[in-house]
Image (cartoon, rainbow, N blue to C red; front, top):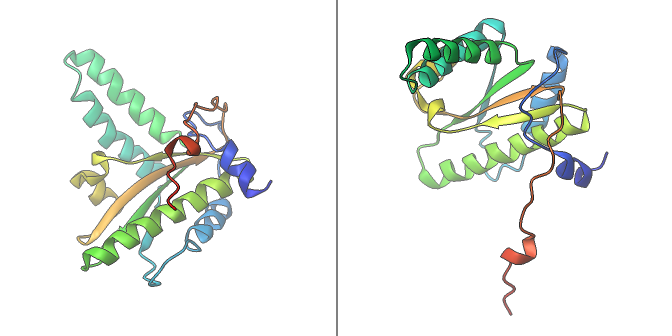
Length: 186
């Protein structure tokens, strides 16, 4: 598979098969993250691979958050249990952590570098017949998750990347063509 095909086939995968991932598979993918363009060679990344206990703990943390949005006590408990089960069953889960530079310009460059590395991982996963789902947002900044992952002051959880063999491949979502968003200056 070439890069263009991998870009076109990449999807956010919601469900995975039961096939477990070997440590070597994850190590190979992470080695490709660190090859991302890195202007100042700051190498601002760190990875936390979540094993069974850590995935369960993440499910508990996420489950508490989700359940807190549900008024009915029984429904909230069901949400909590389903979330724990869902996170625990993920074949692979990797936290991508950015080491935060003091200089705001370098910090911004490093954030871009980390995301280019994540894209390397996503495309390499497609090439290997794997799927991914990148999770971002405010929930990654919570004290409970940071503690569970061992994220220190001066570090940021940029994304949690779910990895595994896709149970199904979602259809491509329509997107506006680049030409509709491109200005050509003389």
